[in-house]
Image (cartoon, rainbow, N blue to C red; front, top):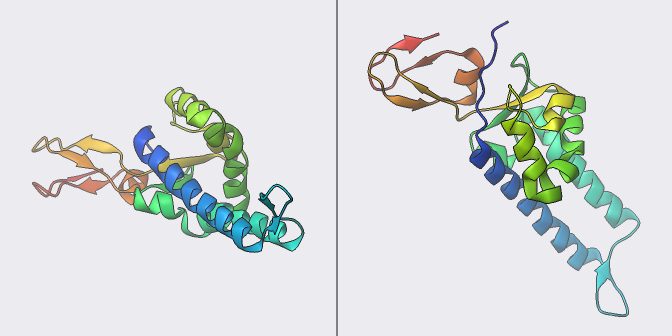
Length: 173
């Protein structure tokens, strides 16, 4: 088994989280506005099946899509992918584990817990990734040993630890 060499890629990961939770919050707000019951003070709330539908949507979008595709919309746009420590596709259970801690790591403290965890972990993992035994890959940089071009690797190149320099055509393993 080849050891996957990751980099923190804090900015890519932060933007991916902002996209994902921004998308989810827009959906949540729309659903509350559409299906919510208006209180005496003019605020809205949801209960019963609409509340269940929102919870189900979170399960489908975050752990569901992530376990099927290895990435949510935010990760896809940022060219990131979630894989097991050995580079395989993650399971639903692994996706669920890593996402259950989002409220604490990502949303609580504006991502400070996730930032500290990623910066202080040899595999650049958040606490949820450590628990789920997953890695976020993509966007790692390498320098071509032949032409010294700085390259940004895809998730697949990072997993395989193999790439071809687009400048000089030299392959590396």
